[in-house]
Length: 529
Image (tube, rainbow, N blue to C red; front, top):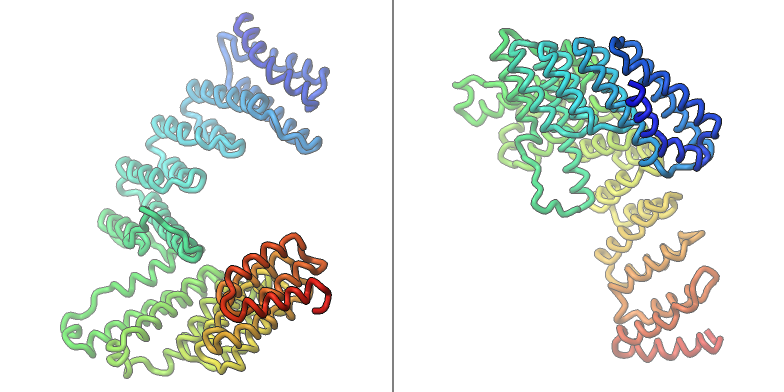
């Protein structure tokens, strides 16, 4: 027994030496640790051991880890983790395994091991711990649910979570809670994929061979779980509106299910009947959403509701035949209702960029008045650093619906933004719009105006503007090249760049522009310009 303890103490020597060498612990503290762990090790090697000794051992090791973490923060030392923390973490995991092998029925001991793995970034161990625990306790549905949630939330593995739910249903085929959590997991997964797809499309990234399954994005897997649950357990086993009143994804699913509810066979024989059936389904959807926003008055719930209204409005607007068939059914009350939903959402969540964006798109789709005022309200309420999507939407709307004078006023307001990203996006959009509406002269005037609005310019931003405009007008505008050189000669520029700019100007300019540039450049060098 003494030999075993001595070997384990010797195994600690490298990490203890590192603790002393890097200044995390003093020599006296290291000796104290050796003395304490020796006593703990002897207790674990006795012929008759008790659970409390294992717990005390583990707790002491965790206390050492916590102290190391505090000492690191105090002296700002973040190296040698592999030599210091990793052996301690490995030893704690090993001790937990010894304890759970001896006291297999103690669920709390298993869960303590899981909690340790989560806190100390050993998430790779969590699956192994749950796997061993479920082999001993397959009769406990709560543990299956906990394991599946861990796979989804801690390891970001929907496949593993789904596999665990399917295995749990073999042991608990009629368990309502398992079906509820499985259903919710599939809803969350589809919502996560939709957000990923939206972010990738917004960033214009090449997805390569990776494709998002349309069925999964539409929540078809959740529908399969729902059908299986209702078929396996009589009655509405999921009781979604009762059990998940704080889950916007579930409300969204339940509302959209109303669109797929079967209609009367005779009514569907005529175009007017089909249109009427669609209208009734949409009304039922809205009723579920209304119930949802009353029960769950959250930003995500309102976002789901407004997004649904916008999507249905786009469908009716884009499909002319459907629009004509629904012209009797689409009363002004429906339009006012959609507008009311949009504005109520923004009043409740006036600082949410996504809510304003969805609501503004809905109002634009409806052709509502005072859109310009709504944009002003939106930009007044949201955080300016997050306002870029709203500016981009306003640029597009103004270009499509307002006069050139009004659109130019919008761009000029954007140029005054203190947020660099907004100001730069405004300049680029302003230049594009100017060139498309007024040609070269208009774009040239706009470029000069953009430089004027930039009261405290950063040179790299100025260079970006010049390079962008030179791509369009670099073959004819000799003044632009000369102005670029003058900027580099100024207090913010780098005069050594002037030679390169001159060489590029001589290469790109054509015809008489070359002669004019040469003459003006000579005057500039001699101080006469």
